[in-house]
Length: 248
Image 1 (cartoon, rainbow, N blue to C red):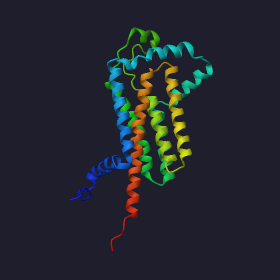
Image 2: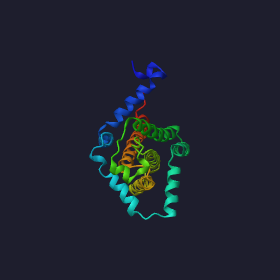
Image 3: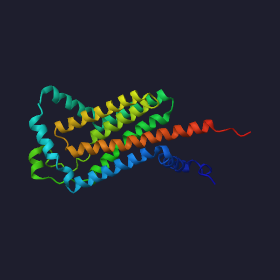
């Protein structure tokens, strides 16, 4: 008996099986390895932050460099605050809903919109869960470098970077899919630039450590890959179904 004969309550199982098969099919093996690599690096970084290992060695130095060397101005302050306002979880959720609706209308498929919204929501929820688990101790050097975070022990990863990175990344995938390599490269550059800008604003305002924003970027990458595979897996299934011979 196939899964399809067991009723709608088991449709999720067939979707999960389809996703796993699509992820590990031969031509997607680099994608699977990339996803595994991101997850392993993110896990390693989270453990390093939790035990205050050597992965945090550059945090205090980076905070001191930004505090002492970066030229501060009213314009840069305002730009960073606007970026922080736009990257809040509520704003990211709203942008995800709007972007998902527009892309669903553009593609003529509700699935596209659902994947966009699910990718962003997954990144935000995962960020919240990781923050609860990862407790970061403080050293005297870090307290001196960034007093504003002296009492904050659950800043890893950066939710702003994770949310904005996931939003920009999955939107870029939806828009650039099937386009020329130049268009795909341009979309990639814009996404990376957006993540770098948000990351710098978090460091500039003293709201996060360097390891926090790196963790947020890795988390965004994980969910963008998951969203991309979900979209392409369904597309491949539709193509195969349309090209299958019809029985007489």
